[in-house]
Image (cartoon, rainbow, N blue to C red):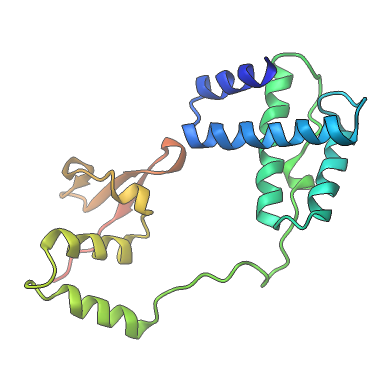
Length: 183
């Protein structure tokens, strides 16, 4: 019953469906760990959280996966506090998230200058590339929008007077992006 209530609370908080699914699955994983390993420990405590975090590290989960699970449990902790099931925050993200050593972040593949030149040269060929697809390439290259943001852009999202593009990002957040004008 508690998980269903948590799910409903996330929905009323305006969380996206995928976010809700992720949080719920992470909390279910935590609860099954509690039942399996720490049979008589309450739902969430500092002790159970620390043991679970140690378990995740021993199981060689990636840092980003562990931090995602910690974040989910922090939101769950907030839910339990609003329902007065627990009376304190057992998880502080600044203290509990695993720090990534500088320089050890995942490498991100980016196009080289030469590859960008080749792509731009290719999209200029009107016989091969439609205006729509050319626009998609330019928006991705020059604005930094996510693909999920790109597919939601409508003509009304462009302010031609100020050269601003408004996109709806993750979590329904609106952001404005300046558009440059070629001479």
